[in-house]
Length: 190
Image (cartoon, rainbow, N blue to C red):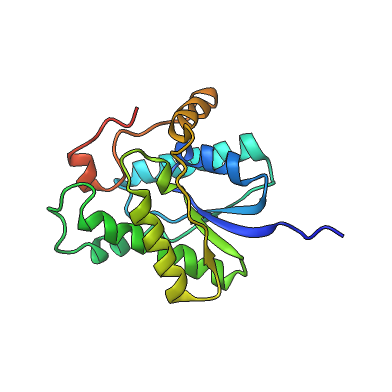
């Protein structure tokens, strides 16, 4: 008798970032997507990214992958990064933001009996996968009961593939990471 696939909670920040990760992981795991991004602003941007994530999931995976929305309250993010508003992109503010989102993902995974959790953040060529995986591993150790699945989804042409899948599915691709501070200094995401 074959064992059922392990349950994976995948933190997703937007539709385009989820494409490559889901393509790779859906073959081996029973996945639910966790959209916890109180950092994304303004509200219209948050709603657009959430809706595009849901649309892509439904279009590409039907009912096979469940969509779960975390608390969208931007106050959660602003309290966490208070005093770090002037940090450059990729600096300490971003590290705090990664940790905030991964800790909530781990809590949700633990409380809902997932075996593992992971994030799509590593698909971006502008994000440090080693740092994100370190934070994920530390978070798993801190929260216990759930393991973190390290990844670097940009490897093996993962970012290029995400752009390709996004074009095929007509997904909105943003030009900044998500928070209002990164919007002030947008980086071309292609």
